[in-house]
Amino acid sequence: MQSIRRKLLTLLAALILPVTVPAGAQNLAKAPIIDPAYGIKAFTITIPAGWKFQGTVMTGPECSRVSFPVFRAYSADGLSEIRLLPTFNWTFHPSLPNFHAAGCMNFPGTLTAEEFLKHYEEMVATNGMSVVGPMPIAPSYQGRVDRTAQNMGRIGPGIHASATTAAVRVETRNGTFVIEQRLRAYVECRISSLTGPGAGGGCSAHVDVLRAPQGKLDALVQLVDANDLVRTPYEDAWIQRVQQTLAAENQQRMAQLTAQEQASSAMLKKQSDDFMATSQRNHEAFMAQQESSFRSSMNAANNSMNARTTAASDWVDYALDQQTVTGSGGTVKVSSAYSHTWSNGQNQWYQALDPNSNPNGVLPGNWTEDTKVHGNGQPY
Figure 1 (cartoon, rainbow, N blue to C red):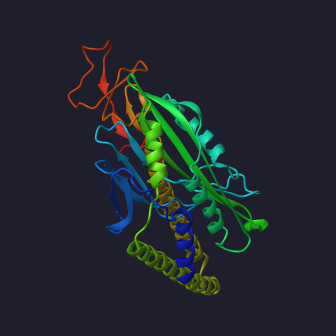
Figure 2: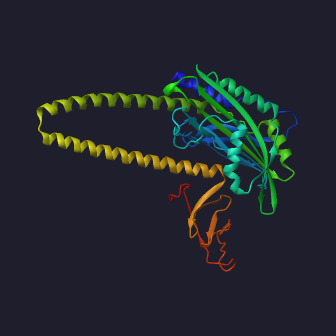
Figure 3: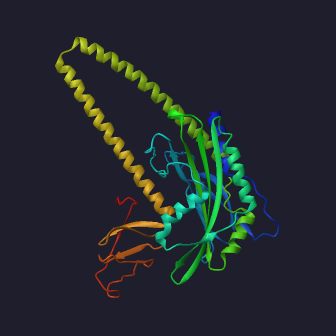
């Protein structure tokens, strides 16, 4: 348990370091993030006073089980926003090209922050985004990223750690308005110096997004960077609950392994005794029972994998500000900014927030309202 505590604190210390808030800064407020798994406060976020806030805690995918916060803070008029996206994780192995865990990105090796942002831009390019150019990184943020690499390097011997950061300015349109955004990322990677099965490594990419009407992004950038408003300080009580949960899970896994070993030994002895003492009919019945258990286990594994795939597809939709709907136009990805989507079967879609909105009789064609589904097309 002490080893788990040290590793978890090292990981969180790499992401969360204190900063100095300059005097005379805009009025700020504190916003809590409650972990739904425990019902307690996990993080305390600083946001501009008067802004609205939404946040939660997500459990990492198979390749990185560390929980992380996600949030969005936005101005009263909804035109300016600070958003911390879900963490992007991936693992890789030099001799296993398909070394890919459920819910994780499928990259074959390490990426710099600049390289990752290019991949991210390609993922969200369907939203009409255009890249203006790179943006500078604040020295305080760069220093925090540099210390992240140093802290990650202390996880254990034989681990080479790196952390890079980059930012770009992009533009999108909201109707006739131009919205400026800053996409900023830092990518931390860990590579083992071992060979064979212990080789390979993994990376995590952390992306925050600032949005503002044209001409107002730079002021928002200055406010966020001066106060490091994407910093996510954690609560000690939450850390203790996470440590207790991890320790309990490890004990449960050890108990299961011990029980499986004992059951396997008993089963092997019984098989040997039965082989010497029973007839071929009993042996065939035993083999039939084994086949039934195997099929049941495979069905359970497939059901579990389908559930994880569905959750991962919904997470990707959230990260890309999109939703998946199905209707007369088939199953498609559309903007998540609207709650109602209509299609006419002619590769045309109409979206609205008003539940009473109906394009029939206003737009040409026969329109039917689509149904929202999971990101992989599965119904809710």
